[in-house]
Image (cartoon, rainbow, N blue to C red; front, side, top):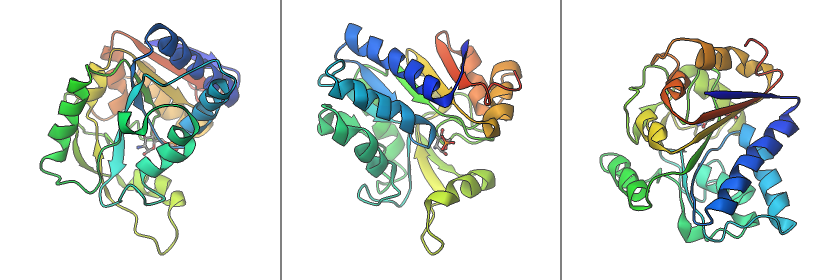
Amino acid sequence: MQVIIADSAQEVARLGADQLSSLMRTRPNAVLGLATGNTPIALYAELVRRYRSGNLSFAGARSFNLDEYVGLAPEHPQSYRYFMNQYLFSQIDIALEHTWVPDGMADPQTAGEAYEAQIAAAGGIDLQVLGIGRNGHIGFNEPSSSLGSGTRIKTLAPQTLVDNSRFFGADEFQPSLAITMGIGTILRSRKTLLLATGDAKADAVKAMVEGPVTASCPASALQLHPCAVVIVDRAAGGRL
Ligand code: GLP
């Protein structure tokens, strides 16, 4: 695991964008694994900035997102498909039909395997972007998730529901299930890039980097990956 401690959240976004930019230069038809949440918003803004200045193109790229809420249609403003369209896909030259986000409305029995088959048909993921939950989750792989898991439905942990409730209105339906790539899926990507900012993530980052490899901190599985890069700001890296 390569751990980079950057001076600021802005610098985390810039260094993260450098990783994606150099991949797109060397492999214009790269398969990207993408994430949602607050953390990658600055990364996507930086990628959009580089695209607009003519330094970066995603015309040949394909992308697979980590997860989606079960029960939210793509046009729902809290869906991760909506998020991706808003912050990235509509702002760059990636072909929308070359972007995949798990389908929150699909048959839960078959949706996971179907998504795995789509990733495999694309040749696997070259670079998987990740954030981390305060309880060490990656994607929506909550503590106790199997380290070998594939894409499937997961029940969200109470802390995750509380952490993500800020995105939902008081009277709005907040899903308690999600479809998520598994830890096995994430480990199969050729490179992983986890970004974390802010002191609320400091304990999770410490457990991921310095703790034992354990299902109680799903992100610790990245210690097993041969090419895992972690970029944190000083606050998120404050307990290392
Ligand atoms: C969500 C997502 C994760 C994300 C995590 C942290 O639950 N499923 O992919 O990494 O929250 O989000 P944030 O970056 O907003 O702290």
